[in-house]
Amino acid sequence: MGRHRSDQPAQAGGPSSPEHGRPPGPPSRHTALWVAVAVLAVIAAASTAVAVLAIGPDEKTPGAGGPSCERSLRVVTSASFAPVLDRLEPALDRDADCVALDTVVVDGRAAADRVAEREADVWIPDDASWAAVARPGLLAEEGRAGSGTVLATSPIYMVTDEAAAAKIKTAGGSWLGLAGLLAGSSGVRLAVRDPNSSGDGLVAAGSLGEAVWLDKGMDASSAALSTAVRVTRTVPGEDSALPERGGEVGLVPEYALLSAPDRIGELSVLAGSDHTALLRFAWLPTAAAAGMPERAAALRRLLSVLKGPSAATAIATARLRRPDGRVPPDTPKDRLPALSGEPLEVLRPHHVDHVFAAWYVQDRRSSILLVVDVSGSMRDPAPGTRTPLIDFVRRGCLAVGELLPDESSLGLWAFGSRLAPPRDHRVLLPAGPLGAAQRDALTGAVRKLTAQSTGTGLYDTILAAYAWASASHQEGVGNQVVVFTDGRNEDDPGAMTAAQLASRLKATVDPERRVELTVVAFGSRPEVDVLEDVLEPVDGYVSTAKTPEEVSAAFLHAAASGVHG
Image (cartoon, rainbow, N blue to C red):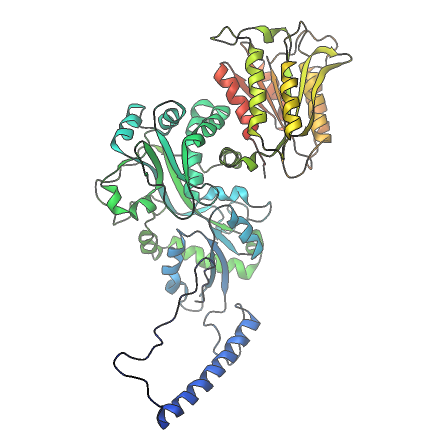
């Protein structure tokens, strides 16, 4: 079949030394004749091999006994799925409908670049969420040439010692409960494989964030990941995330756990009572291959085999499950828990961004404009406290500066009705790269955030901030405006209406200069429905914050938005 593995070292051949117990002697005439014939055969074979390589793997050398199968597909796959393709080679090499595979093994974020570089025909990563990191237009649209088909699965378990397992069970035995333990002083810590280089790590971390997102919202999810990474051992390379110390919870996929059967008996394994975290090995053909009739036919042949009965043994041997979820046949009985929670959905692009931004500071590179309401309502105490709301906002602004890398840009505005006539906003910190000088300047600018006896001036400020960010757009980083307000456009004579703001935002949108606009509305009376309608033309987002913790989470989310594809 002529498969190639880019990550496998060349193996030495068989023994070349003389047989034991028989010292080498001078060659006989028959031996000399045989050597001469062998040399001529090697020369001829080498010439043929050179001819085949020169022509390429998709063409047949006339009269030279070229490849037995004329059709081949360039495949990029993960290390955990490669054994499936290995075992299916005989089934693919039959009859006139055969397909040869030219396969390389690349895991993690680098795989998307490899798919593009080698002009691959199909990518089979260890989770469908990796499609989020592919360049636009590289992969076929969902459904075309079977794109998005799940070929195999592997659930992810919480694996730990008995004491930590008891704490998780007390917290509900859930992913949400585990997130709460990591955020507190429970002594529970986490172990995951590097999310950058494996679906094991990306989906494990993403599932933790997803459980919080579904229960408490996007900002809380971002905050939970930012907190979790501080108590996480990130496992590099190909090692699994099995726990190494007391109190550590390893997030381990089933296929890796079954590769260490001796450890299963000595560890507690939990599946999560609220959700099932799941790796989905996905079929992702490229748009180019799907658009070429000959390639598309070869793709159909390979996909039919991967979905057919001959793949069942191959998938089970790789310790994976078929899409129907049946347990691999060699699974130790009563050692792994039943999967009771509904499977979490495939991580969407923004959710993938959250994981990377939490784990890697360079993924937080952003151009952010923070726009803070300083109207009279900001003097009010935050719910459940005696501390003015503006104090929590000051802390949040400083936290954003601490979380962003130097390659980011940060600016700060204050706003209120006619705060700087004729404008409603005042520039406290002009946007600039976050070097030492800008960080020092941020500290001084934050001190100037004081509540004043003025109206809000919200709508005029939203438009001014969005227009500025669009005009100042920076390539290669996330560009965003984050407005913190009590959520009401009041006491602002002559201000535009909500309908006028929506119309002017729509006229300002430039698809080539994408800006994310978020309005964080806190207090007891935010006009959320009105704001959501207003921001719809720019696909903006309204976040509500009712507690100091939610205010902090909103700032953490701003810093964790990072670079979006």
